[in-house]
Image (cartoon, rainbow, N blue to C red; front, top):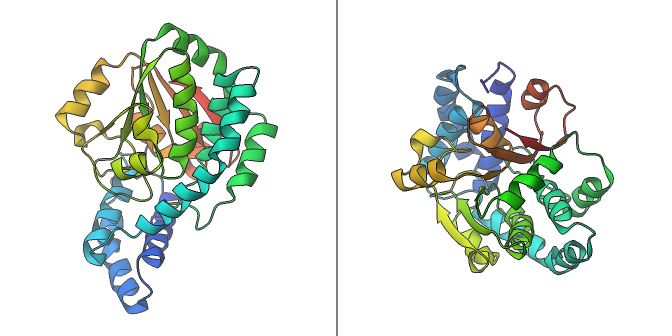
Length: 281
């Protein structure tokens, strides 16, 4: 994907969301917001929007001196964990637990504080289970899963990682060895190793970090160890819009599970905003 002109006002909106989470000092908010304009001005429209977003959030964290999303991440981890027991039962009692686990994983992708300031998780769950998926490659997904002994799973957001845990536990029950990937350092409300431990994911499967604080998965910015792991993976499950932006077109077998939450991505996909996808690369 390439950044579009419509991304520019969104960059500003994302910066304001981060600043309002990070400080109540309006003078500081103004100073930092004006500082991020340089990153926005230098946007390379030949690259995905995630490139510019990464630079913006690095600047914000540097100037605030904190991770502005730390508290909201823990809050939504707790909220999602509160729903976990009933959702686990729903998956296990489903006619096809893999189908149910995938649907719930897509539903969890609504927990995105780069776009939203609050999230109705239970409403998102109802939508996921009662709305048709716009791009549904589930049959190919199931076939690929059943043929693969090992799966690389790229997580996205905190809170959402609990829904990933449900799908990963389902994959484990199918005899699959899953390696989950989190960010190497904070960016937005993306999952890090702290979130994997806080939500119990680290007890379910092997969890590694990608050595990067970039939005999505920009392979050139990840660690050599992760690049080797990614190169050797035969099947990749990729969560979230940022990972789709940065990995779409990769020749590897990747299944993208996400919600199309912005106008630019929706237009690129020729889908309505808010569409849910289980899309094969």
